[in-house]
Length: 72
Image (cartoon, rainbow, N blue to C red):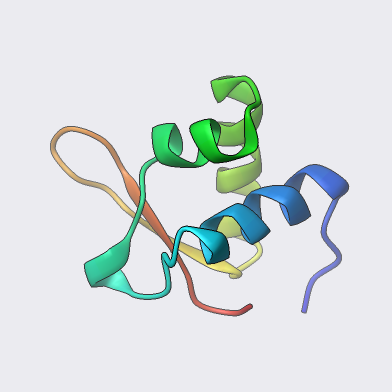
C-alpha cells in the first residue's frame, strides 16, 4: 500500500470507523470532518490524496461526493 501522511491515515481510520467499506455505505467529507474534528479543506485534501493513491473510492454524486474504503 502507498505511504500515507499522518493526515491521510487519520482520515482513512475515520472512514473505517464510520463503516464506509462499500458503495452502499459511503460517507461524505462532512461525515469524516465531524468524526476527526478537523477543517473541511484539510479533510477534503486528504480524501482526494487517498483516492489518487487507490486506497479509497470517490463517487461523484449530485449533491456531495461519497467516499468508501477499498484497501484498509
